Image (tube, rainbow, N blue to C red):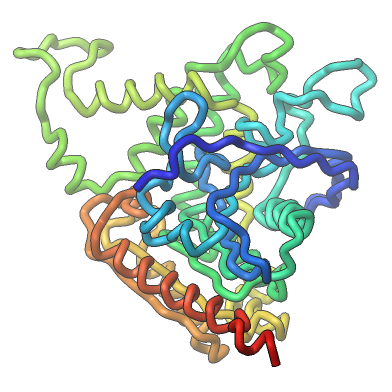
Length: 391
């Protein structure tokens, strides 16, 4: 069942947000959506953290009739059941989907109305989590039932347990890693270089020139998209199928269907995504490394805050995900087990690569449904019955 039409909301914060870089975001707006009903005890809220090119629009239909990016998981009767949970989807600062980002006016600029552009401060996963915590508190919620995220969203879910452990009971991190490998950082750098070397980039202030660095964004998306798909899935879907009946013997024309697919994905992405946002978000991915402050020991990172030790975790990975491979999830599991922290781990044999976390795999959804049923049971058990209330 679908949630139907949903309406985004905005929340403005005049209090400056201190950032990991030492800079400060002087004021900002967060765009968010909510689904379901917050119970009287305010104990059934689940925060969903988005990945690189997603937004606050997690489920239901937006004003254009477009489904949320995790609509197959979130909704009435779905694994994250909005008949039982109050779900919050929030867009992070630096994004291009409503929250304050590079396309918004810079209040510190001496030029009235000048947008941030490349001057928008570098943000990290930890900065996003701090901003999200403020929004949750403004909503009157002192403790979330769970924080959920996939990929970069999973990094945010992990960061929640390290920065604000008292504000959540469960962490659900899907298709994620405790930090990026050198190979992943390399892919991000190639994508960034494609953008910043586009003649229309203008040092990140392309808005003032009335142009968009679409060529760079197209290439960046094509590079990224290759890493989201498993090799076998790509072979099965495209193989060496030609676009035309015969070879054209051209170095510039499209010859193979996989080329056509990648160009289509790049063209589509360049129409709606902001180049500066892409640079900011990929850098946040690169910087995330909670073990770095603890000599590279992830177990010590979890042990550093005693409030983290009583959290409960669900970690999910996919066998063909080579960008965030299962062994990276197992690193997280080992660090939790070393601290005797409660953790469930599921490794799903799925052919879809990294994109599997967005798809409706019955085994994956069964794991998620079971875990959220467990959380729902805890929420229900914590609510006093009518008879108890009369005593």
